Image 1 (cartoon, rainbow, N blue to C red):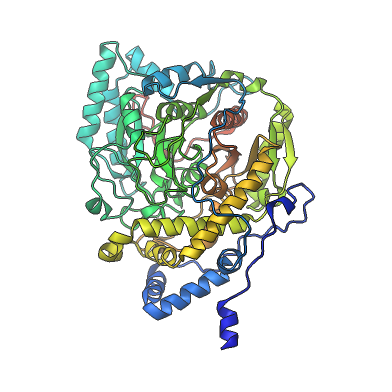
Image 2 (image 1 turned 180 degrees about the horizontal axis):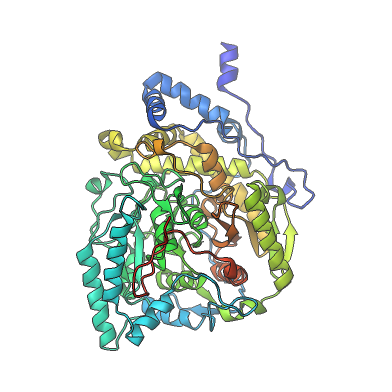
Length: 619
């Protein structure tokens, strides 16, 4: 009996006070790599494993063993903390002194904010360091607006081409899996209204007539919000646009439909057994990443210059990096969250996926602003927009780099991101500061405990009736999520407080933290995963490795494409900032884009909506 009790009560870590932990470059803090002990499972194997987990007594034992083997017991459950819990990463607004910015009144209407954002754009977003033009660049919001104003093309013609491209993308040779729902009639109606406005010379903003896609985790009429399931919209009907969608609609954007996603956001691959996998335009046999998989894939493929996603654990930045586009996750509560599925309310945030940094900036201006009064989390802020034409004049930027963490990725990712970082240092004379970020693996597990508990709680009243309709991989995830106790959730929030204190100390010395966006590039979609989904926690941990602080601590972060691996798959570099420092992050992302744009490559699947005919390369 004593042996059994010792097994059940494995000793946990006793964490030292934050003030006693050295964050310097010569710190003796041990870097613990992800300790993932779970085999990849699909097909019949994942079905058998699901049934075992759902079997009352055996399932409880299996879950206990899984959590212990993956160090959750040692680092979270049985750990001892001195810090009190921090349940919500809502930051007091600090008017930080960001450089080369324009300050907006957050009470302005979205079209007014977009108009002011235009003053922040560079004279030529195509210009590279040596003055040459990129061999490939996706069409931008400004390209659409200029084409419409010139009369060379109309929103109605673009809508027709868009619909033809979607039809093309669903053919057996593509099966891209961009959308869960879209309506030809609704797209054509919006486009006709926009065309009339341009003919009268009265477009609402530069977003007027621009196609924008919405992740199926965000309410957008006339579509149901499924969250990637086959049933959630029946339990929670969509009766109105989400706040962020309303703001885009006020700017005249054509909202083209609801994009595919990993079911309930419970995975990183974007493989959805109900609606098919969202495929990577650079290689359709590879994943797009998740959970905002469809949004990233269709922006990469040229169908929209911008799309919205939701980022609960890197779910905007991961697929953006894997698909070679920009992904911006703002500070917690910067963008209103009403009308978004409440799957993970303290870590999930609306984010932006865009073909260029400039387009991310325009949409950021449109949808940011004060939280409506009926929101749970309310904070009054100023909105700074970066003057991108002045980015190159910014000096004295300090980039915090934790070397052991930065290098914990594939060789291709490490070499590419390191090369870009040192080019930034040489070209702009920015300084790299070596730091130590302790307990990163413990933070990942605390975030996993948090997002899992919140997801399970949010769905608790629906699961008994609908659980069997979930994909097999998500049934496993929900079984794990439901196993976390109140004590484990509480201790995870203590780790949140602890990590926020560490990060505040680092931001006292540096402007941003820099890292790769993902530890690996896009991996293959296996045939046996398409029907059941897959459990691949090893690759999953590598994909989320650098994302967690942005969500768990409510910090803003941005990823920007910086190159390709040996197979031609995109690689992203990430900047994480102090709260409310989106303007600084966008400045840095733009600096990277200017430096790397001449190396950007056209995806194998690409639809050119502003040319005379739809073009897609042979695969």
